[in-house]
Image 1 (cartoon, rainbow, N blue to C red):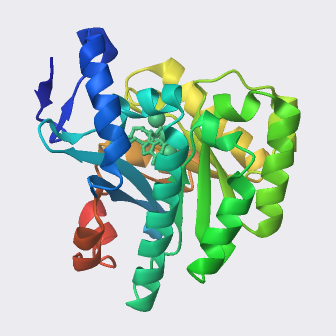
Image 2 (spheres, rainbow, N blue to C red; image 1 turned 180 degrees about the vertical axis):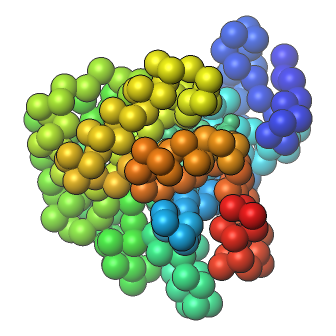
Length: 284
Ligand code: C2E
Ligand code: MG
Ligand code: MG
Ligand code: MG
């Protein structure tokens, strides 16, 4: 039931491919052991900021090097981890590993200004989240401002008052908050106004046909304008072409993330790459 998705270089199986219950159970059993067996890896995708496309930070993206199935994308195991509660342990591993890597980059003198970690709905509502974040920052001697936590619009809007309370605590600590996949959820603008977020990430779905679809272009323009009004840094996800980047630049988008500027890579690859030259190569 697996299918090699050559484009991304990892094995991918979607729910639509009718993965058997047996297979799911095996994946879940394997996933429980994946942490101790050292099979999880983080890849890091750069984000570049206008006007000079300097490195603004990286996003940590989880992959699982499965012994038989190959390199698995998060879409093929995160939903299962979320449903089973295993995401709490996985999420702790991700936060720990991203902060360990950030400390290593700083010790090597690499100018990686910030690392972003994705939080699932269950992690975000976990009562141990705030304490865990504080603890990991202290242990790795990191300033809170070099950590960004990404939550989706839908996660943020669910149980608004509780979310606001958690976000206030994280923001007070100095951690940055990004609203991920923006535009795909169902936002109350009044609530968005009250959110102590620093970043708004426009979902890739609106970027894909930005140049050919006037409706997508109008939506992206209004999200950029909304972000500016609310004093949020606007990030475009999934920038794949120079045309998209130019269009976004004209709209006043602040930060660009996508295959055009850099794919997610292992930390070692990012460190070996001349980071300063990368945006220049990409804007060519
Ligand atoms: P996301 O947070 O919205 O991450 C962006 C996704 O878009 C990543 O997919 C990234 O590889 C992909 N992407 C970036 N630029 C481009 C582009 O130009 N074109 C295309 N086609 N795709 C691009 P990925 O790594 O497969 O992750 C998918 C989702 O899985 C993430 O979406 C996030 O929601 C979730 N995820 C990843 N890592 C973690 C994690 O550590 N914890 C949790 N809870 N969720 C994670
Ligand atoms: Mg994200
Ligand atoms: Mg996203
Ligand atoms: Mg997404």
